[in-house]
Amino acid sequence: MSEAHERCFTEARINGLTLRNRLIKSATFEGKSPGGVPSPELLRLHERIGEGGVGMTTLAYCAAEADGRIHENQLYMHEGIRPQLEQLIDRVHRTGARVAGQLGHCGNFSKNREFQGRRPLGPTRAINPLGLTYGLPFAGALTVSQIRERVQVFAQAAAFMVDVGFDAIEIHFGHGYGISQFISPRTNRRTDQYGGPLVNRVRFGLEVLEAVRRAVGDRFPLLGKISMTDGVRGGTSVDDAVEIAGMLESGGLDVIVCSGGTSSMNPMLLFHGDSMMPGLIEQEKNPLMKLGIRLAGKRMFREYPYRETYFLDSARRIRERVRCGVCYIGGVCTGESIERVMSEGFDFIQLGRSLLFDPDFPRRVQEERGHRNGCTHCNRCATLIDAPGGILCPLKPENFELPAA
Ligand SMILES: Cc1cc2nc3c(=O)[nH]c(=O)nc-3n(C[C@H](O)[C@H](O)[C@H](O)COP(=O)(O)O)c2cc1C
Image (cartoon, rainbow, N blue to C red; front, side, top):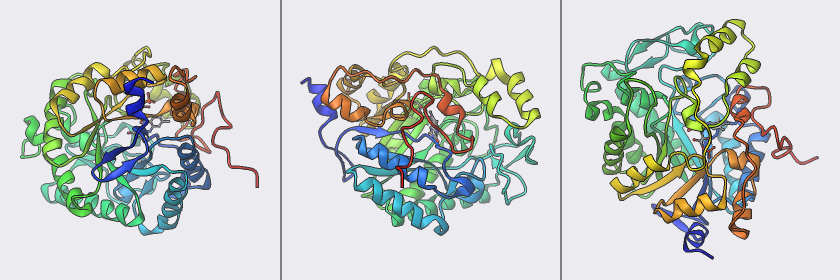
């Protein structure tokens, strides 16, 4: 057995929390929470992932508040869904895995039919293309006192998550959502202490981290997912990300998860592989939005041919910069890739699509070093997040079915 293989499959710790191995299911919004309530299918999916042997699963998109949701079928952290969350966590625990929740806020990027405010708020006034046909065409700029309120909203949500029983929280600093709208110079054109140089643009994220840390205590594991580059002109670069990683480490983050891309402008950078455009056009019911996707199409859905461990070169720079934990994510579908990432000193690996194709992937690699996962990176799973019933792997639609009664 190679040292890297052995390292992956021995216990590992994040700030006092012990995981049975170093493989973590990444946040993949499953579209299985109609009306913002976790469904039996969502519970089963995470339980099944736990049965497959991961060290920890991540419940995607736990919005910090109701208006922090991209749409009304996402979860937000409130007492109304406590029983379902407690049940989900309990069922995963019985499999021997741990549960993290991904805490985020959509900022100015929303098509939430139940939006309560006047308009979504982000760093700067902007058009909200996602909300064009949902009565939310414009986004406003947060005032400084509204920024302070939003920081508190994150802290309250985090306190709730600890109380409900999550083992860890992953704060979403990337992918073009609320915090990354501040970090990116492309979307942040403020001239006050929250805009301009990088140190100012990261300020909101650091304030969120500080408030969340205070709310959860020193001995609670906090991960943070960043975009190493937005992948858009005028956006952040990997050089910026290296600095951001240093700031987050100083701010008390335990593990940095190194992703990339922007859901609203360059989603294919996140995934690599086949374009999501045809699938999204097929799924979209609104003819105007269909047309919008077609028009924005080529510019938005750029080509990134799939290759294993596609973020490794950039992530290595983060690994070299910080001493806190670093989690690799992006294109890990073989035992060989797992060993390569482990041998480069990363502490954890997050897996998305390979677990949707085969929830038993961790167990299989543990038993057979050379195992290869069959995900084809068709990315159809990612086009189904708003489909009735939510996501599935088109090659293995039966994977997460509820057991027959
Ligand atoms: C169906 C689907 C939904 C996703 N939803 C989220 C999400 O809610 N939050 C997030 O940070 N990333 C999300 N992602 C991105 C994944 O977490 C991950 O960054 C990406 O799939 C690359 O990892 P992989 O190559 O292991 O799949 C999603 C990916 C997929 C396939």
